[in-house]
Image (cartoon, rainbow, N blue to C red; front, top):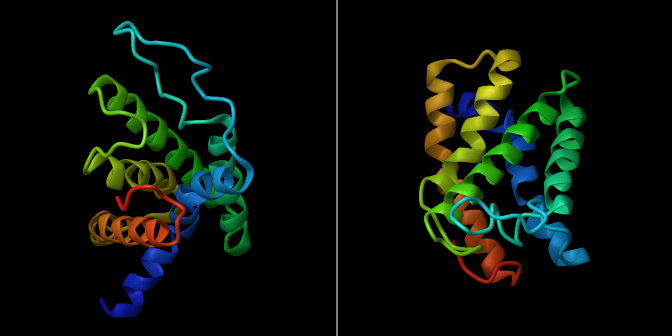
Length: 162
């Protein structure tokens, strides 16, 4: 296995990586939106997801991931990965609210891995990844996530560098 093999593996998940940042860009460009949870609370009395998870942001994940995916693969892998990203992002927010972590707060590992883990699981039917490829994606994603967040912070797109 060489460097090109791993670059190609990472590129397979470009729809997931790009769609994961799309809500941040869309809300910075167009403003907030309607909360995905519509203000509903869980049995613990706290919001299901919070104001940061919006319908607009979730739709941006699915639309951007689908477009990026169709640009290089006709099998709807981008759409499938984007669904995984949206589910992972939403589940992560739900978990944070249960743990009393405020919207925008960090939950290490969940923030960096859940979106890509679900994208991998949902798209692997089409991609037929090897165990090496899956492990590589799961190892490289936290690094890419931290670097992209730091860049977004430096550009003024995020209020925190994580």
